[in-house]
Image (cartoon, rainbow, N blue to C red; front, side):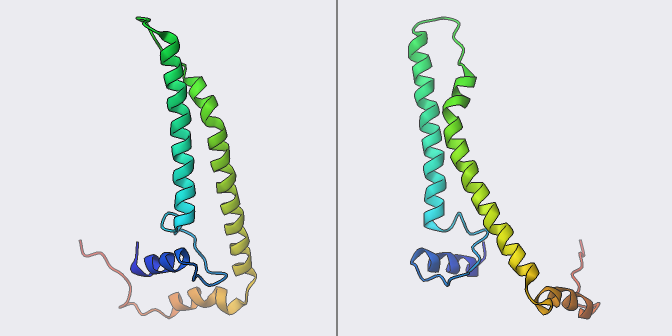
Length: 129
C-alpha cells in the first residue's frame, strides 16, 4: 500500500475524510470496515467451533467418528449471508460511483486517452530483463 493511501485511511479513521472521497481498496485499512470484517470472521469461526464441539461431545468415545460437514455449513450460513449482503452493498456503491464518473464531463473521461496519445516513445516502460 502506498503512503498516500495510508494517510487517507488515517484521515478517515479520525473522522477528517472529505465527503465523496473514494475509499475503494482501503477497506482493510479503515478501522470501521476492518473491524466489521474481523467480527464476521470471528463469529463464523465461533459458530463452527461450537458445532464441532457439539458433534464431538455427542459422539462420546466412538471409535469411528466422522464430522457432519453439512452441519458446519448450516451454522456458518447466516454469517456468510451477512458478508454477502455487505459485499453486495459495496458493489452497488462502486457501480453508482462508476456511473457518476462515466456521466461526468467528456474532458474527465478523455483525459487518460489524451495522455496516452501524447506520450513520447521514450517515456514508455520497457522491460530490460
